[in-house]
Structure formats: structure tokens, C-alpha cells
Length: 158
Ligand SMILES: CC(C)(COP(=O)(O)OP(=O)(O)OC[C@H]1O[C@@H](n2cnc3c(N)ncnc32)[C@H](O)[C@@H]1OP(=O)(O)O)[C@@H](O)C(=O)NCCC(=O)NCCS
Image (cartoon, rainbow, N blue to C red; front, side, top):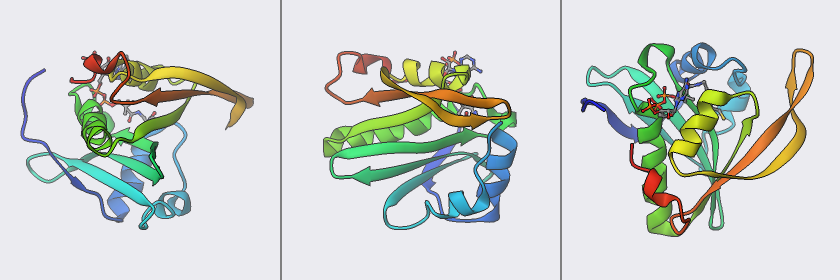
């Protein structure tokens, strides 16, 4: 993957976060749901391009020794450059240093995200039946887990 000058740093609340969410996700979070993740219970990180554009973000919540990836999004114009992988690797580095296990839930139909998580070493450990609403009913959530002691950790560096 070609090197670039993107930078990861803390993500503060701004309208740009809502705009990115609306552009990035087929099932975007509401502004209120996003805003509820900007307090001391969460650690949120931005990936910005060399000219300062917010290209992606990751929202995580820590409880005891578990860190949950609540959301990750990359702007459609900046996809397949490894940005989501960089954000996940960033969080994995922090989790490895602190001894946290990472958890997440993902729609069964979200094949790009599932491929990303598999590529970064997550394993499917369970299913929540009918967890997410859809236009026609509901769909399952796959529950995925990663820890630095997992056998598959060597897949993580993109
Ligand atoms: C999922 C998402 C975050 C991926 O962002 P991205 O920056 O394009 O991902 P990366 O470039 O880091 O991809 C890393 C790896 O993930 C996998 N991957 C990512 N997007 C993929 C796609 N559309 N199809 C297949 N594999 C994909 C590939 O293995 C890829 O490595 P490669 O490009 O060398 O093949 C982005 O598509 C997105 O914002 N989607 C909408 C929001 C969303 O669904 N978030 C997840 C909520 S659970």
C-alpha cells in the first residue's frame, strides 16, 4: 500500500463528524447518537489527510479491560487506501499496550466491514439474531473479537 501523509489524532465533536457519517454509511447514526459518544467514556480518533480533511474516524468505548469499536467510517472519496485499517491498527496498538480485548458488532450484510475486520485479525465469536433494523425487517449482528494474544494477531498490519 502506498505511503501517504495522513495523520491520526483525537477526534473532537464537530459538524464534520455528522457530515462524514451521513456520506459514509448506508445506515448512518443520528446526530444525537453520535454526540452521545463524545464524553469521557469514549476514545475517538480522526484520520486526516495532509491537507487537514477529515477522511475517517473511529469511535471506541472502554469498560474495564474491554474496548468496543462503536463505529468506524471512511469518506467514500478516500476508500481502499488503508485508512480504516490504519485506524483499527491504531486502536489495536493501544489495546495491546493496555491489555484490552477489542469487541465489535457488524451487520451480516456489511461485507466490506467484515472483510476489513477479518483482515485486521478479528474473529467471529457470536451472532445476535435480528439485532439491526432494516427497511424490510431486521438482520443479524456478527459479534467479533480481537486481542493481542489471539493466534491471528499477525494479520493486523495493513
Ligand atoms: C468499511 C470501511 C470503514 C472501510 O474503509 P476503507 O478505508 O475503505 O478500508 P481500507 O482501505 O482500510 O481496507 C482495508 C482492507 O479491508 C478490506 N476491505 C475494505 N473495503 C472493502 C470492500 N469494499 N470490499 C472488500 N474488502 C474490503 C480489504 O481487505 C482491505 O484491504 P485491501 O484494500 O488491501 O484489499 C468503509 O467502507 C466505510 O466507511 N463503510 C461505511 C461505514 C461502515 O460500514 N462502518 C462499519 C460499521 S460496523
